[in-house]
Picture 1: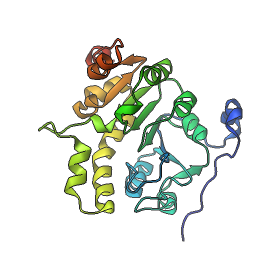
Picture 2: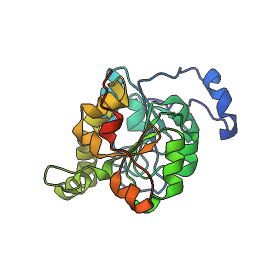
Picture 3: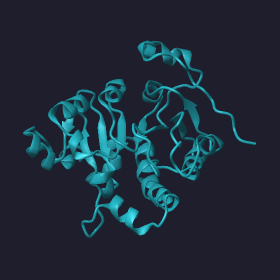
Length: 238
């Protein structure tokens, strides 16, 4: 029998400040949120239900928005069966989670709802990058990781390579999840983002912003903004 959805809360965004005391599930570090994309699209989940079940077995709590899997090879029910708890509102995810994964770019409203020092993982089209967007991210000291920045040893974009080497939406989804899972696992279990980055050169490639600082030279030069290399921000592992 399919697991029933667990609705964490159903309150308008304006009451964010009261949610933590109202929710039965406590906020804790080992939490991942799966936000649904803005535009319906196939194979738009970085983690499959099997990956979610693996995280659940590790003691990691996974939350998602209703409709997260509506346009994927999997369904919301598949994720519920794997241990995911569901809510209607992005604000719930932002408050409850240490790390939020979303296939397309986070909106300004979603960034505004984020907690300070939260980790956001997504694909970020170049048109989303402007001075205001970077400022909004850095004001919250968010670590933003863009998976479309990642390249293989030959310099080829990893997501492009995965898509070209798979023959179906389900195959792409599984391969993408197999690639994403260890990256998220490193971030969620590490004592700090700096520690995770030092132990994952692949993650280093995807850092757009960290701790209130823009870290991508190409973007900084294009937008005429100051920047610092991510290595200079996380060399100390203590």
